[in-house]
Amino acid sequence: MRVRLEMVFIVPWFLAVIPLLFPTGTAAGTVAEQPKPRLARADVKSIPIADAIRIGGPDAKKNVVVFSDPDCRFCAKLHVEIKAVAAADPDVAFHVKIFSRRNDPPTVRKAAAVACSKSEKMLEDAYARKELPEPACGTGIVEETARLSARLALKGTPAMILPDGRIVLGYRDAAAIRALLAESVPGKASPAKKEP
Image (cartoon, rainbow, N blue to C red; front, side, top):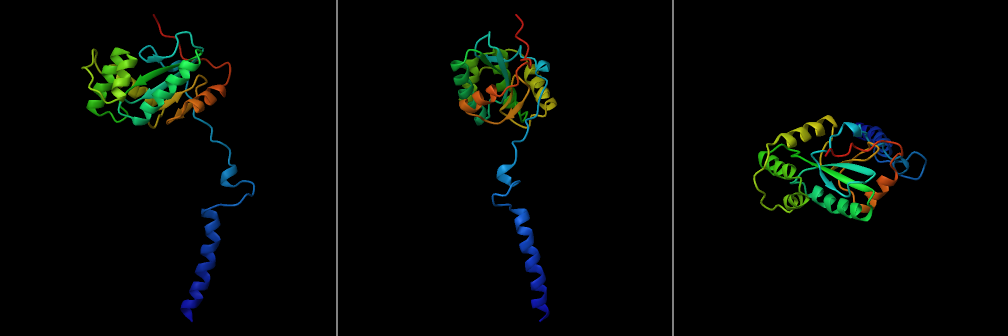
């Protein structure tokens, strides 16, 4: 008799907790109706792009900074998408800042080779896992980009900083990138142009 009495109290308590752990239904305030989370923002003017690889025209009005890792497969996928966006819209340019998100020496060397060359071809070779030459300069560019990534609290790659400062983490296809750019707040400054 004692065992049955304990079960009576345990089962109803557990059944009362299940709806709290797994909300369902169509009532207002359910998980499906929650507003989109606000994206973090960065001060776009504080991001130097003189050492970045430009994808898109030099006269673009919308400049997006992309933090990328040469060993990141989603960075390679994003690269294909940003090339498509830049080719379709001359007012959009992407500035790829490359570094090693895990700071492992082989990737740092690969990132330095790409960053020193400022070559889109070499960036694509890195994504294709081709052998790259030794860096023509030191690893300072890559280390500075890693410090900037940490200061911006970027938790991984790829990461995009939109013209209005919104930080977008992860892969997006071309349509999603175009939609994000269309949502950009007018009047916010894009990163400074490359110096001659």
